[in-house]
Length: 273
Length: 176
Image (cartoon, rainbow over the protein chains, first blue to last red):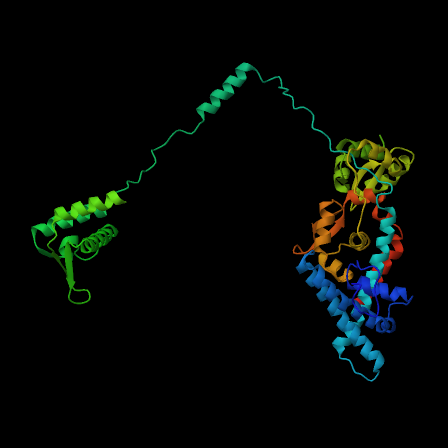
């Protein structure tokens, strides 16, 4: 702040906001809040804001930067209105739009309001904490005691307990249990497929999967598992598949590798895993 | 027993704020009767160690402000009596204007007040309340604790209450 070459160096840099600065500038000159006084302090205010921007670069690391940024924005908005007021005072012929006039009026009003709040704040400061009215402390709860009324007897308690047990809802029908059915595992399918191909050298996929037009969800799953099994066999080099056209029959043909070799390979693979 | 004695008894027993309507229904009288009995109670308490505090149609008994120091001797914690300039401004708006929203406070102060409001709420000096007419709006109001810190028994006992509230209103009317 000290090295900024502003015409007006504000001694106390801790201002709460643009209104605080503006009001301070006006009151230093012992002026009232109006357009004339606002025009007079415009330059000082603008140079203060400029200094603020520079100070921002230095202190940005220490302070909450988003807070500072929104703070500076509010300073700049007020600066714009002030420059408008000053221009108007220098150039009386300058015509302002309705919005601009309104803006000037609003700024004056807000400044008046702010002054009221700031002055009232001083009253508050004078009395705050000086002579405090203390509220009663929170009361501690008394110990909870058991105070049975005369009809609570051991026998009566027993009857109550019996009632409770009698009224416990009976266990109704057993909950329906969903049977988790195993469709078929991929491994079983591979074995099955391998064996069948051993038997007949070629077969088509439709035959293998037993698929005769998809009916149930279960059958669909079966087809999918079959297909995966077939792909696995292809990968292992046990079968070769040929499909002549889209949606045509898939012909499966056994290659030289025997089922035994395949099983050995698989065991070897599993061992590695 | 007189009504003022009943009010005193109920407030003493609960040890916390009680609404006018609750007092009225407990004593089986109208709210107006309670209102009329309050000055009597206040007067009778004048030279006693306790004082009647009222806020938003709620009553509470507190220790007389001249005995605050006595209580402070008893308390083990140090009271935080420091208020920043921003806090003072914000508190004055909450105390002297009627149900200010955060937008109102921002408008008067020219800066964002959410941080300072949160701070004041944490300190228990102000509280947030839902607007009766518009449930989307929240306004800020003083707590009993704030009145206690200020040593006042009611909002109207604030310094320069008449002139400051008038000044706030005067400008607000102009701005519309």
